[in-house]
Image 1: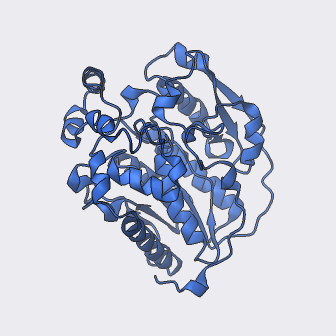
Image 2: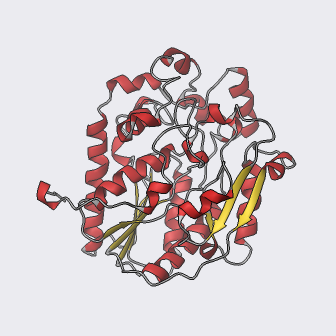
Length: 365
């Protein structure tokens, strides 16, 4: 799908400007903070988990406290799903398995559900389902995955008429980050139910012609849970894409899987202010010394306790990959591949070619 310069649409202020980070270690949303800075907080520092409507403005939530977790949405959770998701979050955050300390530090705030007023129907409603509360080493924010996904979606919004960028679902399935703290893992069962509920609610409200869901997170079980959630929804005209799929030769084939060179340069492309300059590039060798190899991470994945022991004993910093890979990469080339693939997806979706498309990247581990 090719666009000429005259196809560029005007840029308008967006509700996500109040949420997506523009500078690391700044602002109330913890998704904009790094693991190492969060570790500096007093041990009793409180975090707030808002539960609100899918139409609640982000700025309204800023009144709830100085350290905010991404919101959960009332309309996406029926039955006991809310209680099960909250229980899982409290199992993981801020320290995995601290069943006493975590509930003492996370305050749950139920913002009254709002009536969802009718809105104009978009041709395409797009959103990401990323693991936004996931450590990405000492120099990148927790929300690194969402930052990358929305750099693509917001670019598409400038070029595709009727393409609306919606609110992200910020929780997903992960393993490697849990031993380091300040990360949240939803089981695949919970993620699937939550995606289904969100899609049903948001499509009933906004009545889009099509839904396009994306992520950049590497876990295939995370991606498959998203696809399952979309498949089980009441909405049929959807497509899903793992946006890192065309980057295998730069990432997984080089053993650079998580928070290494690839993600560093793609986040830097969005805004240099999103990289912690106290760490990068001046302390590259120190960062490199704390990286875990992809092979070791795969070996340890089945045993979380062994993973944690190894990470502590070897001074690991949360990166699984090769930070030095940064110097062999072209950010514009990689972003262009992601954008071109997404544009083709949307073109096919609007033409009926990709409805129900399962593009979970099964060919790549």
